[in-house]
Image (cartoon, rainbow, N blue to C red; front, side, top):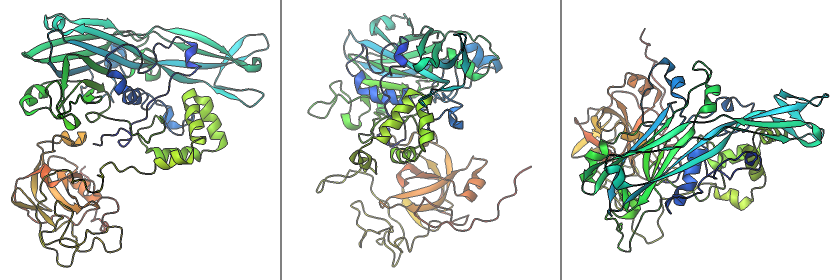
Length: 565
């Protein structure tokens, strides 16, 4: 998974509350307030999590995708969530729940160590447009247009909330839990519209919630910390539709954890000696990762004794988010602002926003103040800012710098006349006994046969039909691949990408849809060093499947299998 959040299409950092939001006491702005000095290092990523999916392109109320909102980290009243039974627990916050639990490991470096926690979420706020009547009264309307053409739309907004907790670690280790209220009050505010056309009334209901901290000592300097946030309110009607229950919910709930005299252990890539206690941590409806700038000394080590900062397994901060992220996520520096949409790339989304009609832009501006900010920012974006969005390569090194160390490149069969050397693969320095193949030139991939090519893995020739165990590498592995660790799979094809790397397309043996995935050409892709051979290559069992876009031409698919009754 990439290090930059923008590369992983997570929405950008949110802007400060608008003047309309400030009509109600909205509480501290995102990323502000007391807390560890390092929390501001996480504020941009945390705001991206907070406003992920807040409003999606094309930013209009009439868009179908904006009629079902609030999809991550939603903590609803327990009686509403469990009306049909207990919720199914998972590590991602894409499912509605009434609680969120983070368990993590931390090392203590001082006897007076303290833990600091910041709980953040959005509180819904209903914006109701009301038209003025001849009798001086007002009536609710879906929309209202003034004489000058300005429009206002009834819609749901959200107010950012956050609460800080601080407690001495010694107090938690004495067996005492620390609980604090993290809820938010209800309220109402009225904004008159120009020329007496009407008014906008904003209402929000009280949100009742609490966060509890507990800790267990596992070794002299090792502690397992639990942070559990719960919605303690009750639904006005357990049978009400979701949009009504959301008025008493915490939305996009996530937690920042820091402290004094403590260092957090990566649960994605823990040090070898802490792999077992890290694996015993149980986080529910959230995914904790290291965050913030690493604590590095001049010798490249952490002052707390962790590994080298740039890729180490420990750090000073933790971000527990309802969205699966890598350790130390970052906002891409070329991103000009928040777009609230995880499904697009900045450049594509900006281009599409530019192409909205004047009527569509007017509706977006009337839908929500943050949508208006996005439209205005895109319309006024300087060419040099837009140009920065056109691709960013983060893997390049300055000329003359040594290439990053990596596993040795395995050998493969000879391909006479092809673009590879006699071992069938590039050497670690990118050479091939000839020139590196130019895939963008016609004929650059001649001599390659994905279903018959093989690669040497641990001394075993692996190719189409081979059985393997999936062993995703620890550091830098895609989070989705990690869930497949230890599963048996069958290789469908061997592919070579434009960077000279080799990837094996596999299907899971215990996947009942494996045959259908093969027919459609939908595979999981792993590097040779992420596989453990179970048998020698047995030869291809299926025709050549489609490869990565642009790499190979897909053959005609075989006749579709007959669906089981």
